[in-house]
Image 1 (cartoon, rainbow, N blue to C red):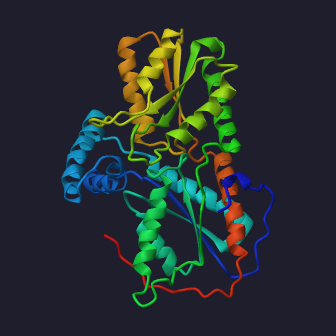
Image 2: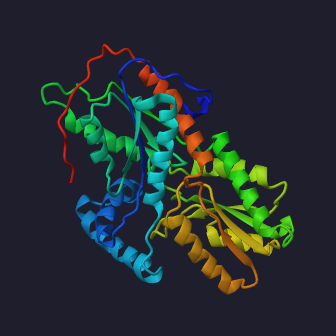
Length: 370
């Protein structure tokens, strides 16, 4: 596997063969109908919660129903029928990355999207890619950190489809000539520099002449993780590495910077600290008159980057009413981000299109997944 760190920014000349690459962007996804909350939570329980909390399979439906009730209250009542923008932004990211890649490779490359927990499900999209006759698959989790709880879900779900397509008589006969994987980009310089530039530009626009830099507290938010997860990596290592690099570039100008872990309260589970409110209180105690929340560990705004931060701000305002609070957005469909995200895919695409064409390709039937 070629690391994203070996990316090239030079124009790539398309190969003359007829091989094609399907680039599969994957992510969690968020439901667009409250009626789908139970299904969403059942799949999430299978692929995430069960990794660090022993849950018998028969309990999945009951657990998903209970979680759906919590979500229904949180989104529908507490937050006035909130609907996440994540899926819409994800589609803009897909279109933008495809435009960049096709500028280099033409129609030999097509970008698809699939979600882990809601439609279009990864399994359904992979089955469609197989039916369309793509010889190569590039799995591209559009997630900053990489762990058994994030990008590896994409690999697991792709492997489920491959196993299902295998012939009973020829179990080693596969639908793709090559499958490659783009790993985490938490330490990629291009992403880090983009976050720093966006943050500085926004702070200058909002607060120049109103507050001095030492009065501006910056909380860089990353998804938290349980301290113990049955030996599985939770992404906290990548998250901390990302924070360290961004903080190092900001702190000379803005000395009050803290990580803020976005955690999900779970009974009997200890999560990474400090959480959003703990981080803010620490900076306020140090003299911050402004608290700015900037997401690092997501490239797409979602209920965590929006609602979790808004809830933290509402709680802080009751205790520190004179402090100014600001919530910034993710990189989303920023053209600069889409360009560098496409560049990360170029080395793997070039490698797969360089594979000799004499390798036999398997045609499989379309599979339906519930």
